[in-house]
Length: 419
Image (cartoon, rainbow, N blue to C red; front, side, top):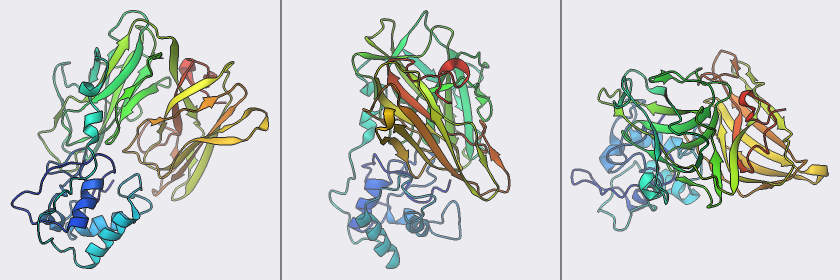
C-alpha cells in the first residue's frame, strides 16, 4: 500500500511546525492536521514513511517514487478511487479543493505560521488501557524468543504479519468486559486482531499467513483511529473456558527498512469470573466459496440462517477481507418477507483499517443474514479462499447477545453462521 498521502482520517497530531521548517498555507495546514497527522506526524507512526508537518516535508522525494515530490502524490491520492487517501474516503470536498488549488499553484510555502490550526481532537485519549473504565487483568503482547523479550520486526519485509499465542491465563469460564490496544513501537504497527480458538497453538512467534485454525474467531481489534471496546454494564463476552487460546495477529509495515524495530504491542483485556446478566459471543458470517480469476473482478455471497429462538442484540460488526477486497456488506432479510436492512457496508474496503463498527440492530427469529464481498484481482494468478494475504476471505464477525443465538455450526468450533 502506497503511503504517500494522508494515511487515514481520524485523530490528529497537534505537533507544531519546527523552526527549521517553512510554514504551509493555513488552509493546507488545516487539511493535513485534520486528515493526516495521526500517522504522518513529526515522528511518523503506524507505517507512515514520512512526516507531513512542514513545507519541506512535502517537497522531499517520495519514498515510493524518488523521482517525484511528496506533495505530487498527496494531490493524486486524494482522488484515487481504488486506494483513496484517507483510506475511509471521507475527506471533505472543501479540503480536497484546498489541496487541489495549492498543488495547481505549485505547492508554495505559506507566508507565516498559522494560528489555531491544531486539527481534530486526538482520539489517542480514547484508546489505550489507561482510558478504560475497567482495570485490565490480562494482556496478550508480542514477544521475541522469550516471553519477556520484544519482537524484532524484520527489516527486509515491508508487509509482515506475525502471530503470538498464549493459553488463557485463567481457571474456568471467564468473560471479557473491555479491551484496549497496547502500542509499543508505533512507527510500524499497522493493525491488530485478537482471535480465540480451542486449537492448541505454537509456542513463540509464528508467521500468520496460512497458520490460523479453522475455528479461530476474531474477538477484538485495533487500527489507527479506533477506540477502546467496553461492553455495556450488563453484558460480558464469552471467550471459552481455560482450554481457549488467545492469538494475537499484528500487521507490521516497515517501509523504511528500520533495523532497530523492536515491539511489544498487543491487546489488554478486562475480564470477570462473575458472569454478567447478558452473555455475548462472536459469530462469523460470510462464505468460503471464493474464486477471483486473474486480472478480473468477482463477487461472492454467503447466506446465514441463524438458529435463534429469541431477539438478538447486535453490539458490533468487524469485517475481514484481504488485500484484493473492495467492498463487504451484510444485510438482514426480515422474517416473513418484511423487507431488508443493511447492517453494515464498507466501501471501499481497507485492509489496514480492520476495526469494529458499533451497532444497535436487533435481529428476530426467522431473519436471514447475507454477507456479500467483492474483489479485484490485479495479479496473473487465481485467488481462492485462504489464510495468506495473497489469498482472500469474506467474513463478518458479529458481536451480539444472547450468546450462541446466531450460530448454526457452519464452521469448525460451531461459532459461525454459514449455510
